[in-house]
Every structure is written in structure tokens, then in C-alpha cells.
Image 1 (tube, rainbow, N blue to C red):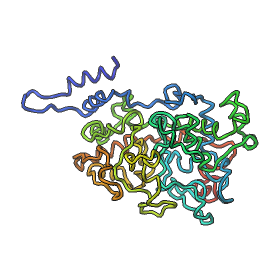
Image 2 (image 1 turned 60 degrees about the horizontal axis):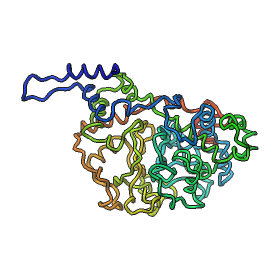
Image 3 (image 1 turned 180 degrees about the vertical axis):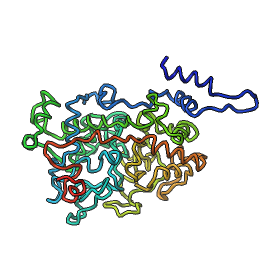
Length: 445
């Protein structure tokens, strides 16, 4: 018996009060929360490991984690010098994976639509990035859907809103959709989602690193330490660079959030509103039915009728009503029953980038909760018959919405994600962006 479970047993005897048969027991919030936790597998079912506890982190058996591999991946993820395939001279050497997934924004983009190649500037927290005026419209590297978070992705078996990356898990049996000549062909390598996405993403997002370039930038020894015994002809390829990046991404865990501290036994880690919100999350609101496990996510897909990025109030690039991305899972599987269903996202550090939903159609965590509470779809293009059975009114009061928002917004906020960013890069270049405007914004020269 653990100390916490012993304390729970004592608290249940001390904190359930009622001598009258006709009155309801009054339960202290912490005791009520612990009861709900135990109904859903106990604290361990929701606890994130530390980033350096590599054995405890979920990993692809074909890409076992090692300190050397993680260290290399951290640098490559932020390295602007490998942005060698930009469409224009203005873009080459100015962007990185972190352009759309950096620590300060909770490993999101910090704006409604991420911009890699063709972007200019950074602002304070990514909000100042904008299209470079000298870059033709067709040359921007953008996606017609909001950039998802890279945080806690070790707990996702497939990647992207439609789950198209990953050869295992829920993607078993989708081989006919791994179209040759497209990024989805990367699934044929047989890796899990995070590895597949990282490998494909290097080419999709116009990055590359060959043996000569690795030598010039100071990466050769780092690659050889991460993948000992691999020949250079295989080593300096998108596959091995992607495996290192995926290894690093698997260590991006929000284990310093108040909720995680509470799960480790710090009773005062959650403020009173967040504590009540956690009770609602696991209880009345039923959020845990989809947002579960250490990352408060799941490998399931649901249609909640949210607007697409084409409907965004800000001007977007390359968005159309008929974008395949607007079909969600159905855009990948080709099955009508999967249309408009999007992968359940993780919930940590959401307030770091104030854009929510696959189409950036919400601006606060509370807005999303209020929307789910009403269960009235935004998007008229989503047929009523396609909506998830989970999309039902929750019956929450305004105060309960506030409390649930406090839990998601504040209780799940890790204040120290900058610990995952490198101090500098082997190239000496600035990151997450390296264009003139970004360097000025970042005070990096």
C-alpha cells in the first residue's frame, strides 16, 4: 500500500460527513478527486514520466531511445541550417521544425496558421510571423489546418489530425492509402506515427542534410554517436535524421504541470478552481472518456462540427472549402464514415498558443469548453448524422465552465518547457527562425 492510498483511505473516513440518514455526505474536494482518480485507474494511469527517464517513455521498438539520439534530435529539430530546399533564396536557411512547434508556444506555432518556408519574423511568441512579401503565393510552406502540438506526442500512435502517419495501431489495414509518391508512402518503412511523421516531414518541409553538409555544420560525430555502425550512405538521410528528431519529440513531456505534481502527491499543487475543474473533468463533464492517459489524449477520432481553417477570421494561405484536410480521418482512409472526424488532441500547455480546434476557430480554452457544453455545431458543412455521439450537451453551469477551464488552462500548464530548447546550435544560426526580421525579434545575431 502506498502512502497516498493510505492517506486516501483515512481521508474517506474523516471527510465523508453525515449523521442524518436523509442528508447527502459532504466530501472534501481532494478526497472526491482521489475517488474519481481511482475509478479511472489511479494516479499512475495519468502520470507522465520525467523526460530523462527514457525507459519509461513510450517508444518505437525499431527506434529505441538513447541520450545521444535525443541530443541529436533536439539540435536537428531547431536547426535552421538544414532548411536547404527552400523554394526561394529568401527562405533558404531561415526555418526549422521549431518554426511551427517551439517551446514558448507549447510546441505549437503561436499563430492561427504555421508558416515554415516563406515566413518572415517571429514577434514575441510566434504571433509576429507573417508571409514574406517577396515570396510567390504558391511557394509558401503552409498547411490548410492548424499546426498540432508536438508536446506529449510519445502517447500518440499515429500523427496529424487525420492520423495518416504511422504503420501500426489504428493504421493497420490502411496500406492501400499509403499512396506512392506522396508523404504517406513513408508508412511503408514500418515505423510508428512519430517516427514516420518526422521522416516524412523533413522532405515535406524542405529540409535535408547530406554527409558533406553534416561535416561542415559539425553534425557528423553526433550522428555517429546516435547511430553507431550505420554506414554514411544510409546515415545522412531523412530516415535517420527523422529517427533522431522523433526520439527527441518523445521526451517532450509536460511533467512539471500542477496536475502532474498533484499526481505525484503535492496536495496543494492545484488551486481551488483547478481542483474543482479536475473533479468535473473526471466526473460530470466526462472529458476523460476521450482525453485520458498521461497526455490526456487518445488515438480516437471524433466529429465535433468545428469550423475549418478556411473559415478563420484571419487571412489564411492555401485554404479551400474542398481541402481534403477538412474531411479529417476520412480524407486519409477514404471512408465516408470517417469524414469530419479529427484525432483527439493532448491538452497540456494550451494557453501558450491561443488558437484552438483544427481550424483555429476558438481563441480561449473557455470558449472550447462552452462550445462543447452547448453541443451546437459551428460548421454547417458537417452533416448532423456525422457528429460524434460524444457531442452532447454537458449541463455545466457557468461557474463549472470556469472551473473546468481553470483546470485545463492552468492545471495542465508546464511553466518550464524552455528546458527542452538547446542553448545554441552547431551551425551557430538563430532558431526557431533565422530570417532578418526574426533575428531582430529574437535579439539573436
